[in-house]
Length: 361
Image (cartoon, rainbow, N blue to C red; front, side, top):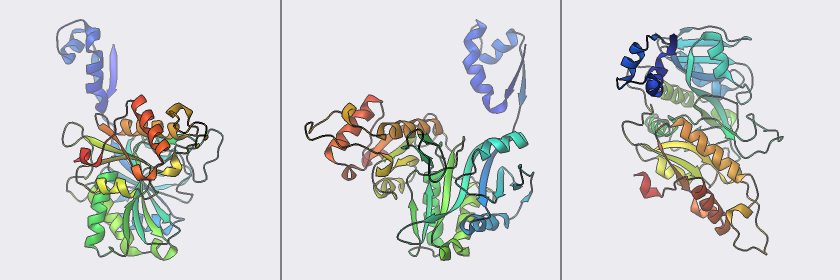
């Protein structure tokens, strides 16, 4: 028989099928003994960077990145999305909503034959405070019920795979912003998981906020461009934030509770070598308060979609960090006693380990 296996799956295939060849030989020897022929094909693994021309906080960082050396015009993604290539990076520019243009990773793969390894979106950030900010965050709308319409893309109950670079790039962004004089004017912060669009590969958003004046700031756009340039290793240095469970620390923070800017989770993430999965703020954990007749209810008696959110966040985080040790970190002070009790019971039921701040050191 003839087996055609992509390069990244050869070892997995050999390991999985070793027992089928009834010998004590190595997997490769077993394949030879069975008269199998393996044709190894290599497909490019690339990073997809997405910008929209309708948003200055999106297109300006993309333009600053494209002004750096090495970029060439790439293929057009149907219907009329321009692209640019540099080493393993691909930048695409469309004219639509950054949160509603779904499945761009799969569409790129279908059009080019390349394999998307990760997706990075560039976008504006809005906030009631109007405070200038540079933010990083995972995406998903985990708490919505089937049939509900997500106001900013995605689909109910869905969580994208969080990009493993979120933690390392957040720390790098903070250093770069300080070095370029954007701090303290700009706040450098994580955001909780929210909005779309639908993706199938590890994803993160890089955002500039929070008003039209700051969306157009060229110095902020330049820092975001430098983050991508250095973070992806396009300048010749090692890339930042490549996940490898076999080297370095393997602990991954799954944030549960707190406000949108995840301050207590962020305190931990600022430490070196901490990886970041999904960050669930309080609004992503809808919990129905128990009646007064049951002042100390069990986990199964608390209504709401909070279980769905936690489970989807954990599963997506686990898939994004193969071999990682996922630890749920609770913002304890953000919960009432009955909420904390219910969440803790559910985590134990799902075999999700809980980590205190010192557990991440």
